[in-house]
Length: 581
Image 1 (cartoon, rainbow, N blue to C red):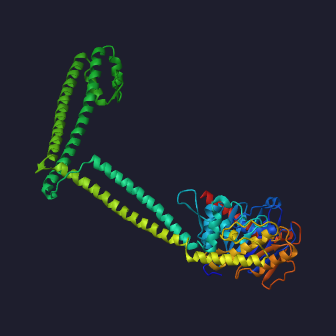
Image 2 (image 1 turned 90 degrees about the vertical axis):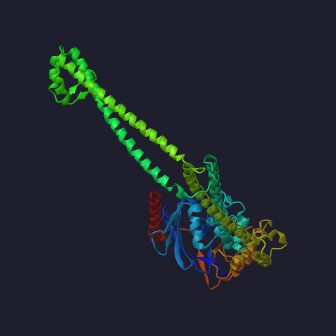
Image 3 (image 1 turned 180 degrees about the vertical axis):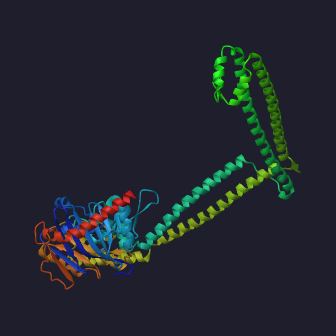
């Protein structure tokens, strides 16, 4: 077995239907397991459930099994770690050792379970997603496809033992060449690096286009000023400019505040004047009313409805008779006239500030030789902006060159996998294995061109030759993986090879071939109606299903239910908590 491979081994499979209150636990041998039973006794239900627990769905499950809503827990070992994989009603959970609390829970096979499993198993196979440059980690069906032969579809054609395989175009070549080592982990790591560099390069180029476009607009809106002069020549003028600007700002604020105060006072005086004039006309008729109102803390104007403080009440009470009211009117008018004069003076002062601003503009136009100070300040600001643009463009240009070189280097290294001596060596090894296997299984007259490609479609032979040719192909691929693969070598699960009316000699030949040609250090789980007289080896476990529809048993439920239900419940809780969080 290639040491670059990650080896996966199943230790135990536990199944339970909480609906039917039946369960079954099967302990697996690390080398070879023979599941023997007549049809309809449960062996296929067990075998289909194994990789189904890992998210690889077989193309056909019986209605009886679906209606039982079976929960499955597969304990396995990988890289020295003991783990458990649980599946129930579309939820997948992973447990560390004997823990009842899941370390990972999901209902999304492609988006979440696939990245978790490929990382755990050291599988770097990816597929191109719908978006440009998107890479999708291999879903479980593609990771385990070479290692499972389904009873219903695996003996009709190769690379068909799981459903939903056509979600990625050209999956057969990708899966076959990856697992066989023609496009090993290194190929996909290089491709990932190339696609990452391409995405980054596209982003950098986009930023460069935006910066260059902005700089062109800057050139159009802020013309260049061509001169060269030392800034020290204008140092005193700049300090004078800043001091005058500060003085101008302070003076403007002072004048505006005083103007606000005087205008508010003038408004109050006009309101008082209006009240006094009305009082002259109505003093006789309203004397009683005015006396009552004026004894309060405030007075409401009979004309405008405004409220005035007691100071005005006192003044108005002194002017009760018509003569006194006229004197009050004259006094208020005189005060208003003085306010208007003061406001006029402030307006003139503000006009003076405006004149200072004009002088400041002239100062900015002051020349030294052919250079204006304003041009110098504008040029300084423009040069700083332009310098910043150029610095950023230079950085991005350097990044773009580096990323483009990364892409080119990756593409050169990737291209070597297409025409390398290693590729030819692997194909030669596979073809030699295929020829030998066909001979062992007594498959005659099979054109070598039909299986020359490692992703060949092996469905040309009819009758009993078909299943034997497929078995020859499956084992040729498995041995090639064991020799050259760099991903994972998973347990080999083969369900019911006695298909298409094999006679006794051929089915004996097939079972003996499956057992004797099993790759070294691999784990085998074979389901068959009988061993056809083939002797068993010492490192073999015999698993029997002796009841019709007897994959699950009532007598095992009580012992299994607490263990399995606790993990199912904890998985549902963790999933709900993650969704709420």
